[in-house]
Length: 43
Image (cartoon, rainbow, N blue to C red; front, side):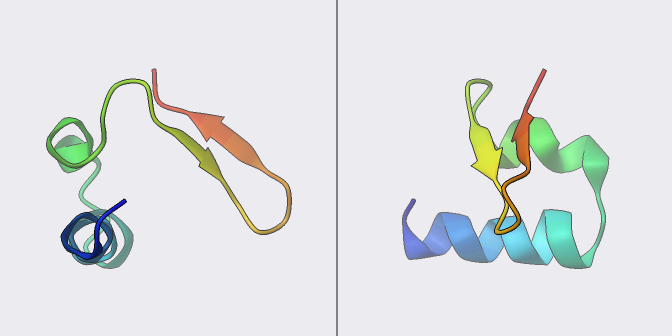
């Protein structure tokens, strides 16, 4: 990910909790791996 994408992820999805913005921030095939071993796949 580029810095710009990471900043958008945190400002729009993480801080603002705007779940409706997920398609505009994350690619449909993204896989998120949390620091505790949790894995989420966007569906």
